[in-house]
View 1 (cartoon, helix red, strand yellow):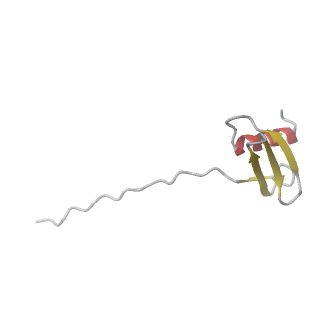
View 2 (view 1 turned 120 degrees about the vertical axis):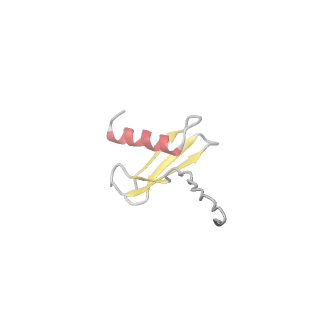
View 3 (view 1 turned 60 degrees about the vertical axis):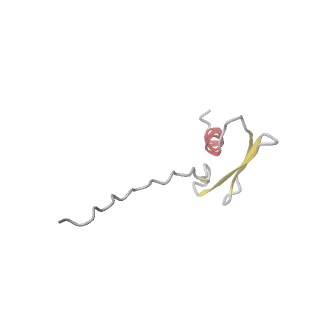
Length: 79
C-alpha cells in the first residue's frame, strides 16, 4: 500500500529578452541606448554618460542589436 503518486515538477524556462542598454565604445560604461524611429527610417544611438551620439539609417528587419553593432564598427574603424 503505497501512497498517492506525486506529480513531476515541470521546470519552465523563461525566454531571454534582448538587452536594451549596451556598453559605450568610447567610455566603456553600460549606458548606450538605441532609439528607432521607423516612420523616418532613422535610429539614434546615444550614451548617457559621455554624451556620444550618432544617427544612422534603419534597414527593414533590423533590430537594436544590429544598429548598435554597426555604430561600434563605425567608431572603432573596423568597417
